Length: 308
Image 1: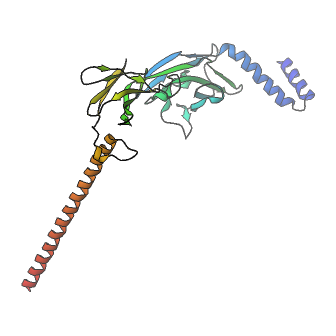
Image 2: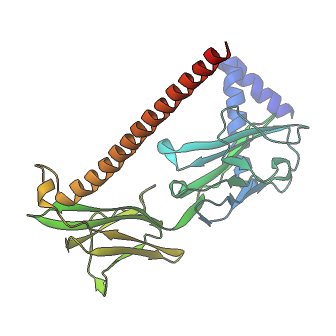
Image 3: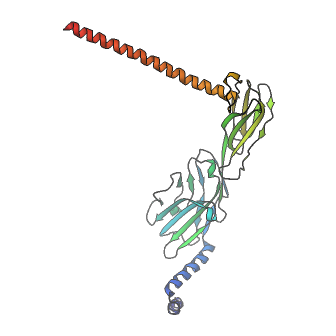
């Protein structure tokens, strides 16, 4: 202890900022010695299903230390400069909970109690974009400021059943038509095309890398689609199956217009026709209602005059 005091006095006398240098040196010594004793335990990989909650386990401890004056917990997605801090809270001495900041995203909260060395994170309503590697970090604040984390992190894999995002037809009568089926899922779903009687051969148009965050989509195309026929897009993965049927309307030459395909024009004309019929119906109803109101007013006025 006396040697420590003499060494501290030497730093103060030798360096202009001796007190600051001494405190930083003590912090580094404490950190280097603590890294051998402190430990963080996480699960290498966690699997979840889209739309359901998931918990990322994380515990910490030290063979000799069990009580801490103040703790700060942080969870982040990714490593390095591109990392995103998802959750941060402070557990003060005597407080029953770890208090997050006012702008904390409510999808994230601690499942565990830091006072019991449990920093497990709960993610509600998981989405495919939650896929990635998560890191748990804790800072022990007090006489000696110590921070540590697990370097490997936890790999979260969110899986989702297949979902058909869109089914459409492109092309013209001259160049031919093709059907497009845009699907989403994890693992990336398989796509099949079905005709009225048999299995048809489609091809992937724009597959996206599944390893990229949020890229769990693919587009399948079916060439040589014929008007007047129906085609079914069927997609599946280990979590389920979904299908949708498309009916290609036959072209009508009288409705042809430059820059638009006949089937699209037919659909558009039907849609506009329905709106016109609706407007005409409303107009007729308004005329009838107006006539009824006028007749009622005339009858009322006649009764009043007769009464007089």
